[in-house]
Length: 315
Image (cartoon, rainbow, N blue to C red; front, side):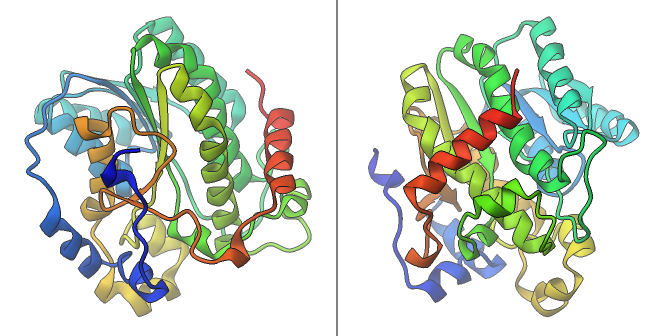
């Protein structure tokens, strides 16, 4: 592991303050200059709002080849035109609802038909649901969108990632996962007996982080480097609609979507990430996966999570 990828250790208050807008602006003082230019093929999910929208525009501006996976076709076409005007070498759309595994399979099939190696896959699509619901496939929607769909994309697109020679997967997680200890009984029940939207969101993000940790060493041997990032507390449309009380009390310290997405773009474009795998980043710096031993799952739960994912996802 390179020096910059060694996790920073701060007090709990210091770690949490770093999630804020002032925390980002303090961190920005140590950033190297952003003289990025790339012709990498980058697949970005959830690109029409919030962090994904900011990342898409920034990646377009440095000349990336973009494939944007979006749910809303109208917003997608408008963004496609904007990305092309900003300087993207090309910008393609795939319309899909990634809460549905059948749609996720179709995304994979479409990319295989295009038959272009993928340099970077950014699993960004997400939403926080305050009311429990199941998809038409009978899967609790947070589990499907936030965990199973990213895992399916990783597995299904692995040959195209390997074909790139040295590819990256960036899994977007959440600082909220620091509050949660993985509960496999909760996952297996589909969160049916006790539903709390923010906690379920954090559970799914914690699970995705664990999968990334579990897989990264083997995938790195095959030329695909897996990392996670969390954006801190950003004032996105998702936060505004799903967490209005949180926003009301914290809006004066929230980050802009551009500040929240900065590390995502850096992880896709910067050469300093070559060969780095298994890290969690915030503000271009590796961070701890756990802030308290009380939230660290048992090895048996990690194994149970891997089994659960295998049962649910096949491609």
